[in-house]
Length: 304
Image 1: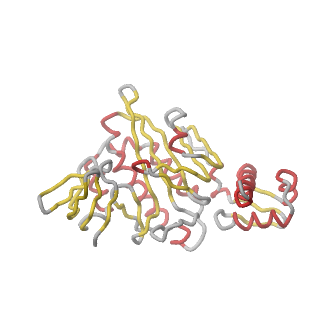
Image 2: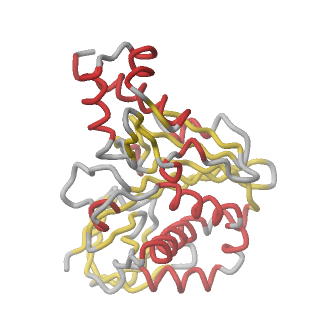
Image 3: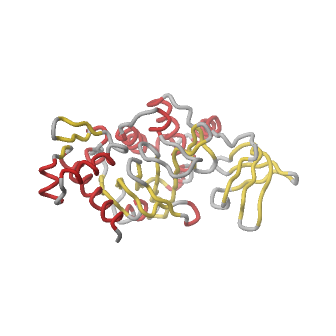
């Protein structure tokens, strides 16, 4: 590990101390991490870019509304970590109704085996839930709808769904969603993974964050607590799939657009006209109507 990696390790250790007590001083940093005042101030200046911190004399205080460790959602097994490989992989070790959340994610899990880094300041979380088998199939529609609702209610933001699993604002990606399910007796075990750009700085120009859109740091617990509350009762939402589908269509930015969808054996080009009850995109091509599932779509390009 080079010097840059070692400094990042110290940054994570400092964040860990902050999340545990919500305050830190140069004296504590020196005692626990062996940092000089200059080194401490340098690391704090980095954390200020991504976390809601304030200073009172020599004490740096983390705002509780931005401290993910402070969340204790009722009815959930809450697992908080500073750094993980993947919250999705980690969630598989825990019982149903567990939520795994991390400050930094090295191997975020995407569709078709893709991985990505969840950097400091974002919301990287996986929910593990149990629900009836016939309801689990509607999760890929329900979760994007929930997130767009929350962004609209909390931030007056016109967040839209780019099929199949992105949340976009002003044509830039704000969040990604991955839903997986596996049989568990007569029920299904659902894994709902989300990556939401809140106070982090996305590396791609095609992405954005709440911090960028609003112009200031945002308390992440405001998003996470609402999301957790909705997912606690998601079975009620998916009991009315047709209403859910209509709300999804209202928020679908892909609807009415000409699209190119890369699939295993080539590509599908046409106009996106609707979605099926299960969330398949219905595309009108030159040779007729085609249904495309999210598992088939390797890449989706809006052509207009």
